[in-house]
Image (cartoon, rainbow, N blue to C red):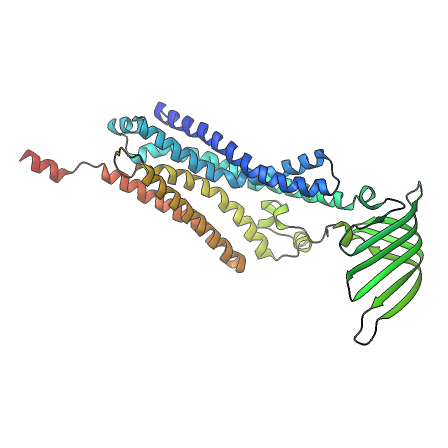
Length: 378
């Protein structure tokens, strides 16, 4: 790599860092505001909010990097053209194919960054985020265990505890479940305990009574049942997550490419769905070189104009939008039928063909015309 290549690559990397920082900050602030509202409303501390926002950062960066690569190459090429550096390179005999080499290296660097994110950091962050959400959901002691006051932990749920012993035993418990207006159930118990299980927190009531009011077509009916012990699932109240309902995005790419029985049982998905998620990760980094080359190759089309290169910039943005729309379409088609996973690589292939065509046009436009030169000599 000679001095010109290093100069262009350095310029692109500096602009890439700037645009990535700005776009990540804007995107991340929007995500952080919604997380802040939800977590603070649940009584969580600022440290928990900061932890959750940091765990969402790898996903945000992986989405923003291709756009930042496009913005860096488009702005950098426009700057080279405006300062006549691009003209000087062309006058020195550098073809569009030759000048595209450092831009392609820059796009590969961006692709490596996205690959590290989607294959390593994002799955780790999502798994940790799911674990922390489950821990916070099950930490109901600070949220609901307050003696002597009526509480409403969820819509249609009323909870009252007369007293809480130092050992954590609940005395004088009253719980009403009125989420279904046609079937209202009230639980009362002398004592109760909260037990954590693999399926989520459970409320074990001892020596109590259940009153169920059923609305029938003729007249309401009230039934009463006494019990020695009864277990009530608190997952509906605290929003506990089911360990047997995990997301495919929480697992590594290697496991998704060769899904085992444990992974399929934990997610409830098929092997084809798991492989589809893996191929989505493999295809995502390929869009970064395409976005970078689109921003460069499009601005090479056309000659010098006092009005700038706004037309080329518009065409570059339209080309990027086309690739993104194609990405969304192929993702939807593959989501409907996982056997169509090869379609996920179509947007990057189509974008690469567009870049090759644009570079060919730029090289052809600057090729000397032999017939014109011969006629002038005659």
